[in-house]
Length: 277
Image 1: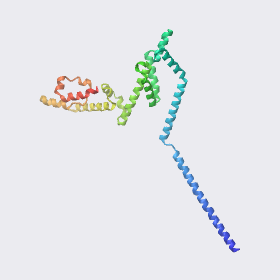
Image 2: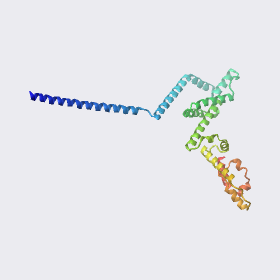
Image 3: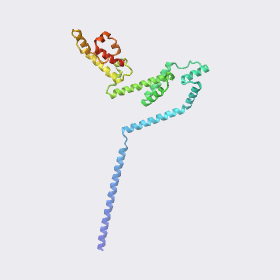
């Protein structure tokens, strides 16, 4: 009997120990699951780049949907326009209108003049610019560029020119920013006057560099003392030492041929400046 009791006690002790181990394992598993859940939750928090990417995709999707909707609504109008172009043998909407007015003898008193068309073209372009989507600006500019210039209406030309100016301005601003140059230079009257005398192929960075060099040279000339009387040779040497790296067309034409012959460095500087006029 005592042996049985002892055996039972041993069994009960062993049973309790087993339950304790199982509870510990279960607790550890629950802790691991909680830790994994927390880690997954942290990983799911989007970064600023991911948020911006989602916004961009949402905006792009909406614009595409609106374009498709606009094309669907105006599909019949586009078909009518194509049919009129083929039937009348013209390529432009303005020509279609002129042909119809001429055929039906409709007075053109209510038609917009060129200035009105240009005003509307600039206004439409500004609406696109105000949206702030550079890709949309480029797409519209490319669409208008695909139309031959002589086939574009006054409104389309005004739109194209306005959009192109914005694209050029945006490119120049980016170039200045990337090179650590303040955008206030673009509103500097002296700089804009100087730049207007340069060839259109000269980049904004080259123009700024030449403008700064010119200002520096002018400041140095103001600081120089007047040359003392001396021989013609010493005068020529002093004059050549103040030669600038760049001369505008207006500055160059002030020198006489005789003076250029006497000052070879000046003549060489003007020759190097000529391609940029």
